[in-house]
Image 1 (cartoon, helix red, strand yellow):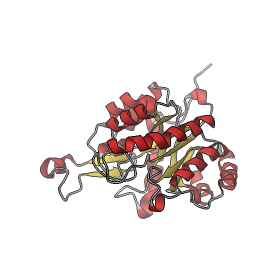
Image 2: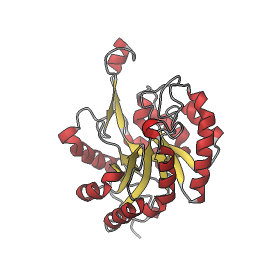
Image 3: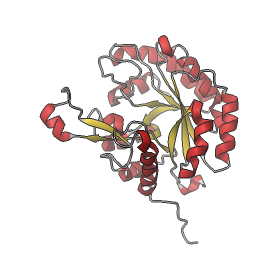
Image 4: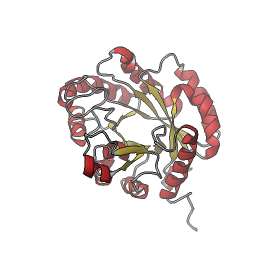
Length: 298
């Protein structure tokens, strides 16, 4: 599909280690892109061979690999994160083999310290990684999940609040770092995602297709620190967000990326209903973008 058609692809996330096995099974559903993810480390996977095999599968169908992601804590390198920083370097170096120029993940965080305390280490680590990426024509996008943390304490990630984004981008003022954004992670903090996206859209490099449902009746009766859940992560089409608005804002800003569904979180469309929910989201998001591309008469 010609990029001049402003064709905004809708895809899904697939574990990098499972890509060769899983992608052929779900391709027939109509996914147009795949974001390959690794948890903490790329491990012993041969990225050159995996890229070759994945490209053989997707190229035949006109599908793209939108991004590679490493989700760990590259700032501490402690415990299971010992290989996270090296994994970032590896996926940056190998991204071109997958046909993508985008690498994403958590920023990392100094464990159980305020976000401010992590900025110098963030500047040190990602100052170098952004240079490495820029040399290879690669952009870096930060997932905006709090991973159970807040401003004062936590592990994994500082990039979950717009004030933190300002601090991060001031510390590393590079054109090739931005956000891997989704409404859900902002809604769990009761932030309205639509005006936020309009403000930050120029820094949005990748969009995760994940929504949320906020139970305002529970918030108003029990608050957000009580025992009752007040918000649920949702697969798009089942949550509160109008994705037509999201796509409108993205297109008005000239967004050239994809929306890749992040499943495995919905409280209803899970387990045996996982792919039912994901394919519903795929078709819903395609309708929100206006359906299939239709050429004008000439």
